[in-house]
Length: 254
Image 1 (cartoon, rainbow, N blue to C red):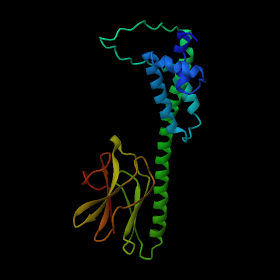
Image 2 (spheres, one colour):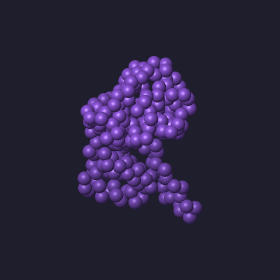
Image 3 (cartoon, rainbow, N blue to C red):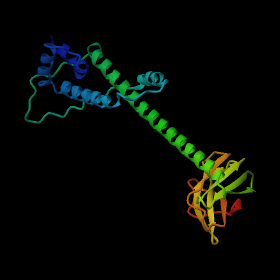
């Protein structure tokens, strides 16, 4: 096997696709060729990282997205440190032509495609985890609302919001819990959100946020309604406020 042939085997060697005795001959070549040694190290590191994603389940459209991204992916040349002044190379390695580099480039392209697929799979898993979290929270709230509305001492007070929409406050002192059921809430400008407050002794205590973009639904309030005389609803900047920044759109008695 010629030195030119050995230069083309970095990709195959990195993924364990060379059998003996060729593998032994290539290992001896690596001890003399820093360019190939560096390229093998980079490809092996990439392959090792891919092992972490073996259990990921990719979304159905992943293959199309990966294949569409491949034409824009370009393999970087190996980062070879400059030789020390005292070292005098016996002979410069021959420059590899395009045809000779094809096997290595093909292997590298496969590794790059797998890396892209891994990133997409992680994104999909994170999206799925977030969706499961939202579903679990909705189920928990539905169960709490069912118990709350069936409580023997449950009270119901409804009102109309300034600007549109209606809200009903359900509360039970025995369960130490309250919730607001809302319907027809208009979208707020500038990313503002609806925020809920307990009214206590002339002050307002934060009790939760209505999920942005929702026009109808229910929100179980944070904290117990004890000593509160009502629940207010205001429009606040994105993320809510520590104290109301505007008069209540509605104030429902307890």
